[in-house]
Image (cartoon, rainbow, N blue to C red; front, side):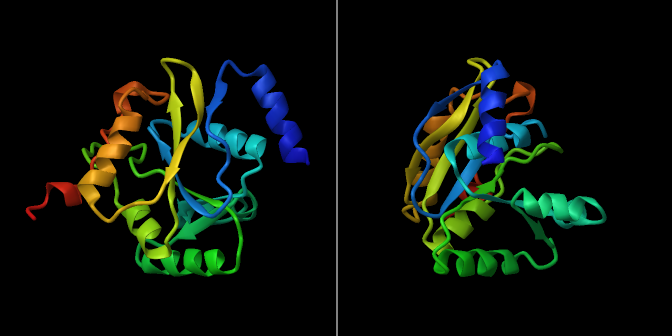
Length: 191
């Protein structure tokens, strides 16, 4: 109840406008893109709380150390040990099988460093768990944010990524200079 109240106040005072699709009614991998600023986290929580989505998100292990740990877990955080990333998929599969309806927020383009491709973890998690993907977005040019379509991945990486690229083609992110084109390294590998 408090989360819904907070989100109403946020959207009432914010210059940002919430647009797009309804909340998914089954577990989904919720892509957060373009993820160009850590402020996207605030927008993601505001979207989820307004639409009543129970979100989980992946964060590096160091975010969960000390006093921040309980807060991050309460906000839906799942600590990822980069030395054992396979554990994340098994944890998510267990949550899906338990019947929980949630959105697993993944930001495949990151916020730091010079890189030219998205990380493929969201794709592997969706395929291995049977979860669809929901395209979440931030677009500073229109000051809109929200959810786009939810769909099943086909396993044809290029075809699936073409659909994702088409959706994000006109989305700039909070800091447009940091936007990374939706492309997986797997698309660039010879067949």
